[in-house]
Image (cartoon, rainbow, N blue to C red; front, side, top):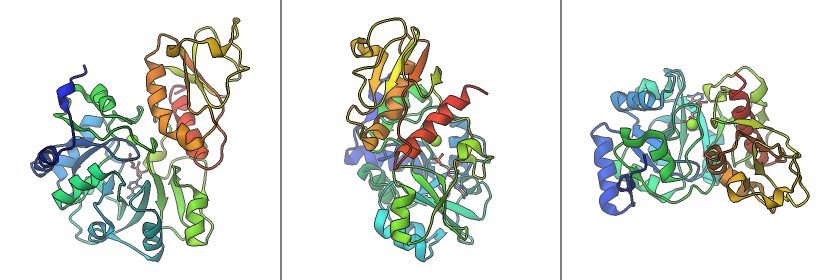
Length: 334
Ligand code: AMP
Ligand code: MG
């Protein structure tokens, strides 16, 4: 049920309300530039436990800790030269690092899943940073959705997920990036991308002057729990690599559909609005990333049985888009 009064504009008063809730051990849903997050005070284990309960998230899956700035995170994580160079270039922004955890950091063990490492990021969205800065402590926040389902890129998506199980969502418009942050493991000899995102291996290589490894985890055994296949799934079945559309299918398009046919006659260009979404007619991968989860969500609500998905090029941010699409399609096979 969609209750409008639960979406709060990020006024000073509402930011204070969010901070008071976090201090009182409650959860707060807030915007970031990647996707909307469900946050708890990262040092409050009882509050963090509520995130796992509400999302139905396995406790072996660690959370990313968000700071208002790098300084705040330096109290908890050990930054090396590589981390500092990358932070200078990409923070605030959609890149998370896995770093060694400081001893007696005070971070809840649930956040790190008991590992000697911690995932950290400084988000670019002003509302997220205002809340964390006003709290004066880091916030552990995964995406504000039931575990395994599509990530929310707008405030009302969060309400669709949790209804009145949360007290409110801070509004912050539509998430610019639309995909979860790139996760880079800096605890290994060679930096490794654990989850692809808008900041690509090439972007990172240009700063570090060394090769970044990335394996296509959609086909491998996961090292990090975020690599689990069952993720980002709409309710409907997805059919990837579509070059035409079946009678019962809606279409998630990329690029021009001018000459694309429906199998049972007719042209895709004549489809009604509820049957087609185009990630980017111009073929822009950043635009496609920003719309991916929103359009999957909208087509999931359409009257068609399944969703045909056109190919998106596997380069740049397209690697992250393909990662999410493959997991979404795989989730339904299992
Ligand atoms: P999210 O679900 O967006 O909060 O992202 C969390 C993901 O970050 C997890 O699923 C892990 O893959 C990764 N992660 C977070 N903390 C760690 C850590 N300490 N070690 C390894 N991976 C981590
Ligand atoms: Mg998530």
